[in-house]
Amino acid sequence: MKIIMLGAPGAGKGTQAKMLAAKYEIPHISTGDIFRANIKNGTELGAKAKEYMDKGLLVPDELVVDLIMDRFKADDCKKGYILDGFPRTIPQAEALDKALTAVGESIDYAINVEVPDENIVNRMSGRRACVGCGATYHIKYSPTKVEGKCDTCGADLIIRDDDKPETVLNRLNIYHEQTQPLIDYYSAKGVMKEVDGTVDMNDVFDAIVAILGE
Ligand code: ADP
Ligand code: AMP
Image (tube, rainbow, N blue to C red; front, top):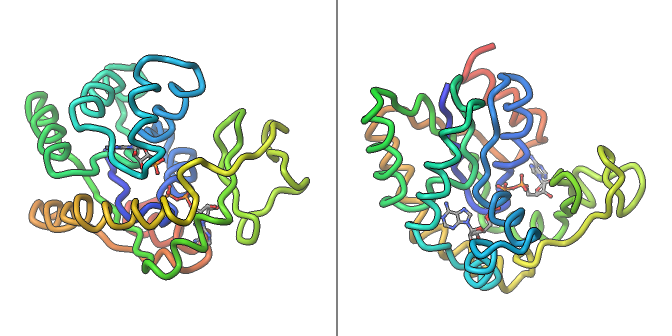
């Protein structure tokens, strides 16, 4: 099963993708996580990506497309995957289509996690990320047992550099300009499904499972 998670930054794509990956036993592929891992490891790709990410801008398509095509070659992608944060532009979606068509495959579902802009800044300001394993929490909606420490691995939690309110507004504008058109793109392909992302995260999950099947 090949699934794309769509939605504004902070809509809950990563939260749902992690839960879905565990249920359906397919990898959760987040381009944002891959870039952050590269930044942490001091790679050349990380340095390039950071210039854009810190400003709330999108990393250029060619960097993202090469990276994801490489990731698809891994063995764990044979049964499918959940894409989180890719594609984010029409050229990225077209590159993905081209690569899939070449091997006789296609996307099964694009799931749009719908959250209005008013809720997004609040979501992002409370988001905390684990520096060790990348788990995501929220100080109010998904708090850790011990403040500032990851429940899974015990490492410290940080506020992402790009979750500052001024950067979030930039990211939201870019989302509306460049990523939202993907909703029409995948609707035209007949694979687009919408869920309400404003409800409790377990209810969002149940709504997605109702679409994908048990
Ligand atoms: P995205 O991957 O779309 O950027 P995340 O999954 O990181 O978004 O979620 C953004 C923030 O909102 C996180 O702090 C997360 O814990 C919280 N969150 C996710 N889903 C919900 C929900 N349904 N209700 C409340 N908070 C949520
Ligand atoms: P995310 O973790 O999905 O919120 O992504 C964080 C940041 O990484 C984005 O704001 C972009 O700067 C960059 N990024 C992640 N995925 C992509 C993509 N598919 N295309 C361009 N930039 C991306």
